[in-house]
Length: 340
Ligand SMILES: [Zn+2]
Image (cartoon, rainbow, N blue to C red; front, side, top):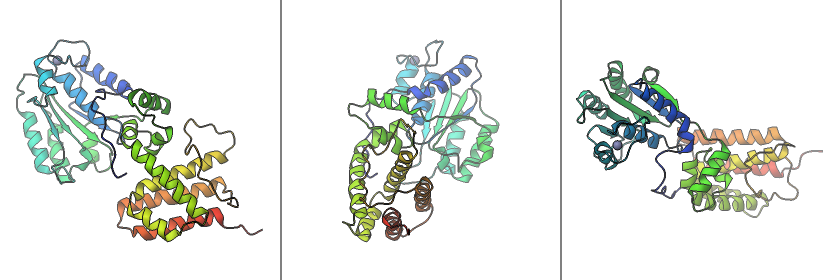
């Protein structure tokens, strides 16, 4: 999706689907049993970094409290809020780089063993942790084997792939769950001044923050996909031209849209299935003589789309050709007359 709108700045520090994890972390803190390393993982759009920062703020707050939530007024809170707390550091890829280098990780490891400025916790957030090079991840292992007292390393990862098993096993892993649909939709309704339809949430794989970010771009994509697909299926548009257009811009998003569209047709085909989220609300009009595809055929087409999507991520595919073959396959599936 080309230009997602920025997330509103006034979002709360944590989200309702974080509550069970917060309770877990808070209880460990109350019993003075916090681990030295947390690995927060989950798909993009669930607020992992926010949770990491919330935990850091709670630990850096200097006010005596029963709960981990930061007071917001003490010296520690003021410094953390201003982004200038000397005992908190956030490591992200350097500008223009796709990886976290061994030098960055070594620097943060050396920093962690130094005495804290405020005689409290020292916290390093590494985000996204899965972008550490192998050497960087290995250099972190030493720190995890002999963690300095009152230090906390928070690794934030949207995928556990790419993180060595030796590293994962030395962290307490906390998966940020995808919220139930009703909770996510309720939260979107309360948070956004604009109505965000359920299909946007479905398009983002159930990630509410991502839905908030992309809903405007999704509305444009949805309209465009409906009309171009309807044109192709009705024979009003050439497959090659439409394929070129799809290949040129946001092809992975178009594939995700097609996947949802096929799944919605499959759901419609399953009698008695009542799903909270149905996509699209108004199906793309199929030509009057269109084949009614059975469920296994729809799933086969969806599988094909998912495979293409993963190929796009892994290999340098000829996008024009891939889009054209896919469109031709859809056209054949929906309009070819079956032999009697
Ligand atoms: Zn405070």
